[in-house]
Image 1 (cartoon, one colour):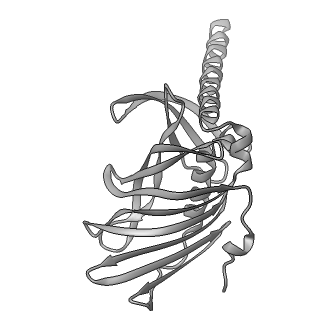
Image 2 (image 1 turned 180 degrees about the vertical axis):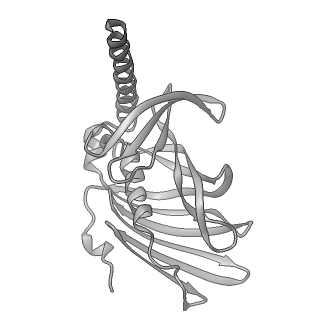
Image 3 (image 1 turned 135 degrees about the horizontal axis):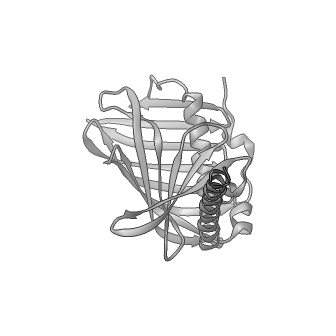
Length: 253
């Protein structure tokens, strides 16, 4: 009997140590990205973006602008050209509400409806995770250490995080040397190639870090869907700010 109890104690200690390891990795990441004070202070951001996105198997150039107020507000505009048609996409997210408007050559087009509630919850969780400090809040995430993995030929510390709002695991990859967060992965919805949406495994790679108001910000992202490149983008004119007025995220009926 006592050996069985001892086994439970050892197993529990192993879990605790794994959780402690995860917390230490996250704490190192917080310091690497500018420290908790800065990360918690500058919750808003504005930036321009350009890159290429896979549109039915073709790499298509796009430009756009983002305005973000973490953790749950965002306003995005994107412009691209597909087979001679000029497409403009405007999307607003405010908590558990979202709205998207699409125009083709200046004329309104079907926007595909609102994002499912689960996707909005995951989008908020993803942004909270990339803020890093919320990962240490047990009311927001459960974190645990996972086995190290390679990213682009370099060994990474891996933390698994499950948000309290939705039972869906995320994996966060931290550079062992710098402590920077260089990859985030989780399951979500993406285009299936035929215009519909399907479950995909999203892997976001973060690089080209630049310090803005004391925060290390990734200026380049590569997004893979099911291990296939879906989007590459670079940011410019990045502005980190403490507050952005709620009126910029208003969703009209």
